[in-house]
Length: 258
Length: 329
Ligand SMILES: Nc1ncnc2c1ncn2[C@@H]1O[C@H](COP(=O)(O)OP(=O)(O)OP(=O)(O)O)[C@@H](O)[C@H]1O
Ligand SMILES: [Mg+2]
Image 1 (tube, chains in turn yellow, cyan):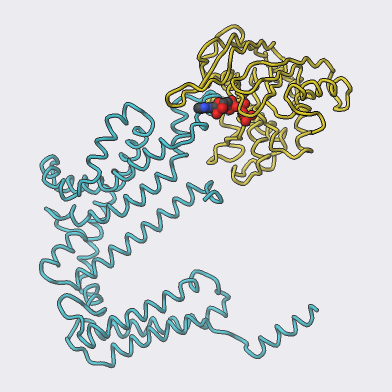
Image 2 (image 1 turned 180 degrees about the vertical axis):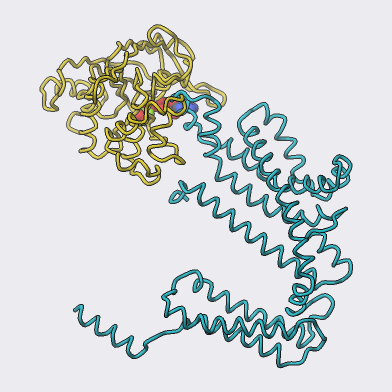
């Protein structure tokens, strides 16, 4: 990917953020006093048990939710509404079923009236995720992993300054997964956006991110932060990574050899 | 191995070079029997076009006989024609039974029932008036239906999308939805400048209300996640309505359209009840009043065929528009 598409990355900060959902009579606490600063261009991975509030954190960063307490801000300005410089790739692909794969990727530029200028980029994005021959297919004709890749293409074509990825590689087979992990790092290096990746895979987090953040069970608090300084491309048998992996897994309450 | 199979197939076709289309032969038999019975047995009561009906069914029988041999020659097996084979047989048998219990035995008496030749007689003698009636009804129905679904769709989108619009509109819609069309007549004829306008209004109402209700419910059921995606992509509310809400609700809209189509046909008779000078609904009432039931049946058949044709056309439109659904349902 040529780097003429490099973007000005967004710095993101969560300042004592607490959030919960109204469930009938009470409020279900989901995030508790989360303070987190993410530098422009940083790649952060979020780990934590299922249901702890990782997706909620991404929704706050995207501006789809406004926190109950505290402040989420991008480059110092509070985030109160969604916008195309902060794109979220949802946990399930949520492609528009009435649009073809190409139509889905075009949705963002089309909605903002930039489609004419971005047609070539749409093809690029499709090729990047390996779906160039599936442009005219409808979402129900895709496998789960292909749908997930289409959703990534739909996000990338908008040149987001902050890319929020909610377990985007969860449904992929291990080979595609490895390839897409490499592509993701390559893209992130080329374009320079800020990235937040939610994953269940400790190894994936360590392979991709500058910083791995571990959350407690709901309500989520930050339990541990690990900085990963090894340069890319990283090797999964790098002893430094293996040591960090053990530490993280211990904190996740999982035995290493499970 | 291959040779053996080839040999067997060759042997088969040598022994039986050619298999006529079996259902075609049976259809020919059924229609032929109708012709023979109609022509050969005396009528209990005299009806119009007995000879013509016999000749026509005889011709149809000959056509099926010819087709029975053409189908294997031309390789039409598995086409639309052979698909409807059983229906052609059933139709012939139906005509045969109908002919016997009315004209030949008189079990179903005049004037309430009419044999097939009675209907044929109506078509032969009154075709010009029927045609005019079809044209008048087409004008009324076309205006009413398309106006109704257009307004119903727009109203449904508004009701489904806007909370405030739904607050006022939904109770009103639920209130007027179940009111039968005939109850609107006094009101409609008072409000509208001409009876034609009033009739268009009745047809529009009958077709518009189900479209409005189903569009509204379709739009309010759209998965919120699609709106979240659209909003993160920077879509305006307008774009979300046009490109998320409406496409997602279209399957429901089509259910409403089918219902509206049926209701609009059911309401035609009422809509043409007062003041109309022509139209199929008017024709039905006029002839009912004179106990000319053969004419009533003849007009009903025409109406049913037109309605079936329109339903068919709507299915084609739906399959085109909702092609993306294939494999989901
Ligand atoms: N719209 C909502 N209304 C009510 N409760 C919600 C809503 N969305 C999420 N929750 C609750 O908030 C909690 C955190 O949800 P969230 O989706 O953020 O978890 P997660 O960490 O992403 O989990 P997973 O790893 O399984 O995806 C869960 O207990 C969930 O039930
Ligand atoms: Mg989640």
